[in-house]
Image (cartoon, rainbow, N blue to C red):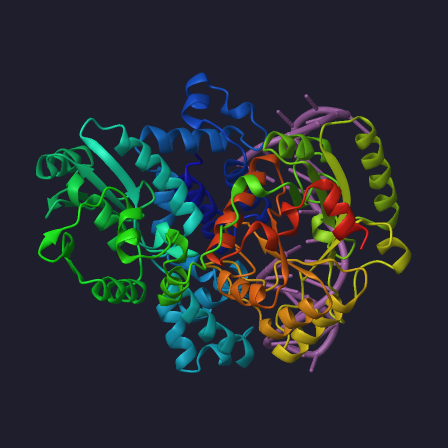
Length: 567
DNA sequence: GCCGTTTTCGGCCCGACTGTTTTCAGTCG
């Protein structure tokens, strides 16, 4: 896995250098290197050992030397440590505020000596910022709002990122001799979109001894058979060691929210079952629990998948046998909304399609950017034609996966799509998304999206809320009105599976299902290595109670063409 | 800082939008 700590250091170096007035292209080199390490699977210690890091494009002498230093000094880079003594590291956090870039931070640092989010907040409250050259009342107000959002996101992690770390940890724990069971619990098991820590429940015969041994392995203390280490990036981990006899009771107990558990307890009490710390008691006798299913059996209700254990409505549904069979990875047949080297993707259409085939998909819908997205190499009308010729040729090659002609069309500020009708007509699928003009008023933004939805050429609304988890709040919009409109017009809304987006949010997807709206689980992938993000979207869809019948890309290729392309 | 040369310097992603200022710099996707 990518060394996230190093990636963060490289990004911070770029920010600090830019603030201190360094050449913009020098700072870009650090951003570029961080980007490459995020995207490519590079084994840095191996490259350093072989002396081949400098052969990788983007890594020259200077970066090779600094990265070598980082690995030689146990994750510390002297250059970065020195830089931090000259320019405060806390400035980097301010650049995370939407609308505030490095130049603005430099200005507030030089003019007002602001070095942290807290100092900036004070400057806003005291009305100092708006009276400073280069800033005005609008920026000050926006800062104040965004600071609240940023402070709330401190100490939180995107679920999929936590999940990636957790998988490694779980594999390690399950390999230990004393481990009998180990699983995630708490909100990470319910797949809430962000979490504050990784929580793992582990069963071992001798829990005290196992806890001591694990504490030694993780170089930390243990108290009450609980170990609290950290990941290499500092993400908190809690490992709770228990006995095999109590394991499945605790697995259930530590997963659901209090609202959910209270509804479960009420049900159990109705059956003369009491719930105590370690298990379930019926008429003075402890009920043996060999799996989580035994608990639901005792309560006399259907099994509730962990993702749904958010509130009492899941318990009510289970009591009526109304928990549906949730969509699963293998239900997906079509890989929708992907990019290629034609716009800002890193792989060719053929590479993306073949990788999708490898992941078990029957068809691949290429949706490169449209012409308004100039930064992303959006396709001109001529390029659209040439791309379609390439797709026709690829389909003639019989790759074993069908390639479908799509586009991700920008929704322009007036709500129209990005090509004239005769060009729009040439696509099989059109995903319409917003990539600019985020700060419209709620009514204006809602009207803009509704106009796009009503466009006869629009099939799917892409990343509807525009949120970036822990980075940018959704734009102002009336999501219910948008879902209502999409349902009325038979349009589809995407669940964008990018771990930063998970957009449509699951809470709104529940409403969409109530309105019988169809959804699509789309990876919005820009390279073969992130096509599997689509399975993160499956988790989000499961959390919204969705089944394969709710998802258009669970249709096989023939049905997809019949029901979606040719409708 | 990196890269690729007409090979040791010159160029490096672009255009819309926003807010501030009053013609444009900064931010963003």
